[in-house]
Length: 170
Image 1 (spheres, rainbow, N blue to C red):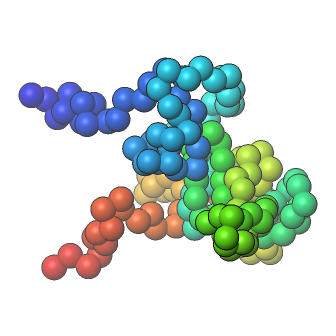
Image 2 (cartoon, one colour):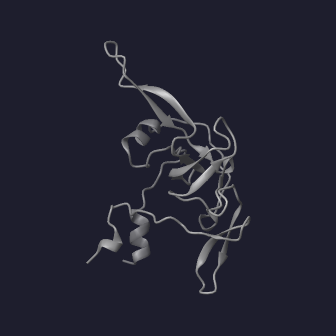
């Protein structure tokens, strides 16, 4: 069997009408919010090609819209299927957890996602929002470049899903 056929068989197949959320598609929370047989209104998302995606987990961004406009924070989660970005400590709302008739529950802050159009990457030179585009270096490496200052914005190291750190291999 070819490797590409094997990898495509391993990819989880999502039912028609599946609505992506903040959880991985194979988690229990995603299954509870997407029960089989339930018809839901389609959510239209502006397509962004995988190669053109410019914001990654670990980037510093500035919020452009909403109650936290002008504040900067670190990206903690990216949901590419919905063009969502979660910024640490920003765009929060408060809710009760484990509330019952006898126990008042715990009041916690949870971060809501922001659309990709509501944030902007921060230029490392002057800490101001900037537009970014992909360019190639003289060595042929693809890098993000700030249009404000011309500096290269390095892509933060992405952790693997299995938690293995390749730099620690012997």
